[in-house]
Length: 349
Image 1 (tube, rainbow, N blue to C red):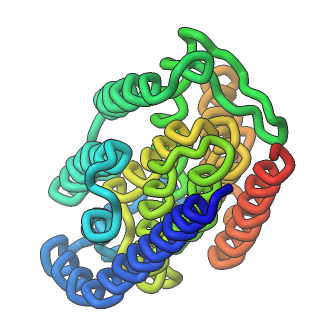
Image 2 (image 1 turned 180 degrees about the horizontal axis):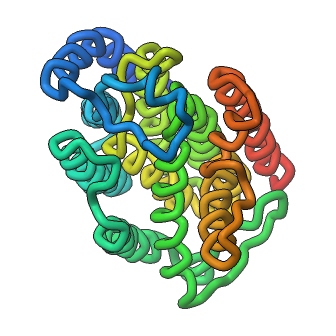
């Protein structure tokens, strides 16, 4: 490579690194500076706080009652502001990610709003929620398809192998399931203090590093570097939120945050062609979602439960694990999965 080429590469590295650095600390700063005041506003507005599941762990009715929700509003605000300040706004990937955050965040907000106003744990019907999720995911799938030339257009990368799996016209439904599935899986994980944000951080870190490295290496697509800036902003926002959401939580993320963050990580995995890797990096989310599906499927047919309670984090609570123990161990598994996900990228080179 010529000296000019080396200089340009170094400039891109430094520019991308500085963007990641600034977006992380901008989002983190917004959360820490605005968090206390935001919680006060939510508490005064909501009075009784987020409705607690009556069929959930009995301890939650005593310890979590009165805690406000919709903390996802501040998370999304921090991510969006950081992205607008630090990312390349001429990059279409940026606007797709922001669009996903806004649409899924709005769907989650409407759900949270009804829950708070009517004081019920059930608001938006599953059919309406899925319709919004799949319609938005279809738009992302259509966008993703035309970012690549054949034969990559309808393929997904196989983790740990330098190979792609062709899905042809099954690719678009596959992408829709990935995004909607990731959104709902993270949403199901938002049931214990610090769990959803604690699980999201290693997942976004893994995909942020993957996007950064692939932007210079395997695909050499510079927009991937921009995705790493968005991941850095999300990590900063989640870390700042965790400051207030760790046990005992002063505020909950709510569907506003969990649906949007899940959809965002799903969208980023699609844009970097690492959809299958998401199942590994987000293995805890996958297990949470599967536990609910298995429980519902088996109970409808036998009237018996596989788990003491679903999602599976409640199962371990029922076994006698403390809430903080469940969160800590789940987060440890998430970090191990994130490291394995990064190793898959090294092995495939």
